[in-house]
Image 1: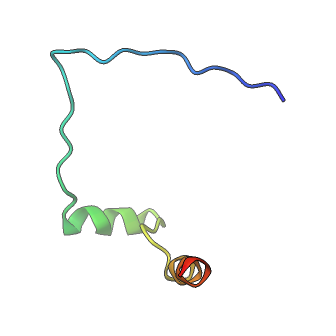
Image 2 (image 1 turned 90 degrees about the vertical axis):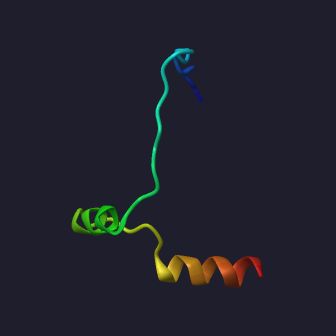
Length: 51
């Protein structure tokens, strides 16, 4: 199996990113894209498997 190394990148010390908490509108837009943050069936299967 061939694996490629990811290129290195260094964080700029004086710059950075801040990400706030999502608001209701963010979740609505996410669902409009057809995406789910958590799937009920997956969550239930996870709980059954590990607990």
